Length: 174
Image 1 (cartoon, rainbow, N blue to C red):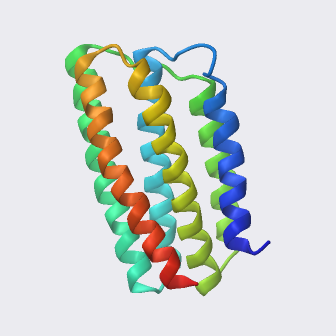
Image 2: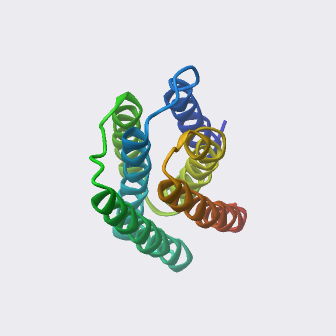
């Protein structure tokens, strides 16, 4: 299995185990807010790593888009939780996401050039697939607050576009 596929398989396994933890117990709105915000921060940190390591303009343009879009959504999320007086609640899913992301960033840090670019984009494809699936099947249906649900639905549309962009970029890098 090449690095590109190994990265994708690894992140899918970790995220599957992470979001699968809520299969029996639906997360609360404060937990959903924390999970969604954490997922955005993780992608921002991955993009910043790509901005510092990649010399491929297409990859760095994509990474900058990830920073801009995920920061905008996270800013909206912070504004919403402030307005609603909701305190995001740390939880096992958020903690597992952070741990997996730290491991992935360390793995990517050892790569250079085209190998880094392919692995970063492969990770973005896998990450967005899994986060989008979690939004569709768990987080949006579990959200009780209409404004939170609406923000998650808006984020899902944007993140689906990110996934498609990453898939096109991945095909170019092969």
